[in-house]
Image 1 (cartoon, rainbow, N blue to C red):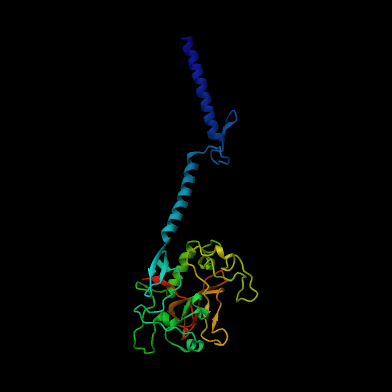
Image 2 (image 1 turned 90 degrees about the vertical axis):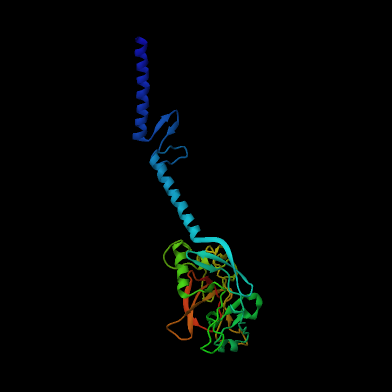
Length: 316
């Protein structure tokens, strides 16, 4: 009987001790056992701290949300390149942005979809005077990229108003419209592609610009301009996070001296693209989207149809 009583005392002592330590954990978040500590149960700060179940669940929810956000971004912006071939055999990579598929290389064809040749106009006066589709190389140099007037974009191949227009884009594709350019930019802004990662305002130039081709010395058409973070010309190797690869091919004027520049300007400084949408304000103009070496945004403007610009396509 005496031994049994001693056993009960010992058992009770250890039970009380364990209860006291449990109470310390609940009340203080700290238990010490020869410098081996369980502490900061609710707010861990050291690598050896213990945590409670609520804290663990909160962290798991946080990281699961991060995984879900990344997966959503990958689903919406499929970075694996796919290809389309045009009527002349040129191959273009394209990416999917939300509900749109865009080519991420500039148009290179010199025929319409049905095989009809598009005239190449090297002479500046001919270029300025034409009201039908035409193309040229920048500086009339095959190494510098192709530019089109808007009449080629619209498929206007003769001056007979009763003649149906032709198609410039490959089968299953079309030249991007004003609203499609707007949709693309809204998607990229919402997806965090502004250079400052905000989702307000258009600060997309750097994310859309190519990583090469911009003038190395930072020269700009904006007199006295200083390049800043967010400009395509600033640390251009960090451009193109969206994969859109807008290359600064430059433009061709609808006027200009054939004895000097032939109307070509801003290669290495400006990237400029036609939309298929005509201006409703001024006859002879259509909408284009562009950015400069020192712009942080991608801008839109109504411009003369016999300017020469680059072209991109959207899947039907």
